[in-house]
Length: 344
Image (cartoon, rainbow, N blue to C red; front, side):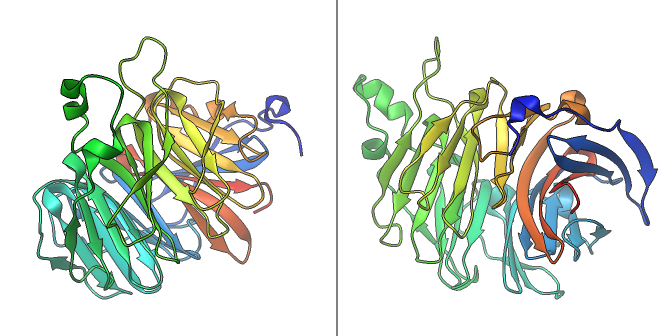
């Protein structure tokens, strides 16, 4: 496999038209084909897939849907909310979306979205759902919600944040780390769970969220008073995964989140999400920046060909189809970026 540093853009960006309301731009990026689809909608915050079926959610109840692994999208009937939807998870026919003011929406297949009575008014930033119906929704001020019935009912977990984030500093400083905002979460099929967010720490639970153990703590950058925040995390079923955050932070796990290793990305940009495919492709996107690796994160190259300097992408997910895997990114102005191994 070629190292990232040797990869060059092979083709210029070419504008073309797709059927329906989406136009696109194409580039060859680091051994992968990248197609940017422009949809005339508000910003999109998150995307999730179950095989080649996917949903992207965003501002004001916006929902886009695909049934071909992200190659084409259609505007779904608007969800019953005017609030921003920050995350969506799919397992089987069940979808769960979360967002502002503790909003939780669920639906099965093509049935209409339903509102679940909120148990918090704090914004929920990420939701994860496994095949058994165990779900975790996390958000502002240490909010952690758990469901065991595919999102129909929820209870609030109360991790001991002060103990989890205890430092050698003064007690006043420790208090600042009480109720840290959680930006990302993962529920595995065995019931174990991961949380990540402020202060660059990943916490793991194996007892349904009753207790948590730190499994990764990012060091503070030079001249920084606190560690970088973690924003995104995606772990595949084979246990390999990545988490990303401020200051170009990307960490990798090969054992379903039990241990993590920091990777050198060569950037100080904020990376809002990261996702990977089994063939070693890893994509990270964020504020006017993007990175790609073709060797499982050993080396990285900027997605400069896509001209992300004026754009940002906030959500990533892996789509699987008969033609192979691809990574879908969504972002502002309804942009959908599809990254796939060349030939897929």
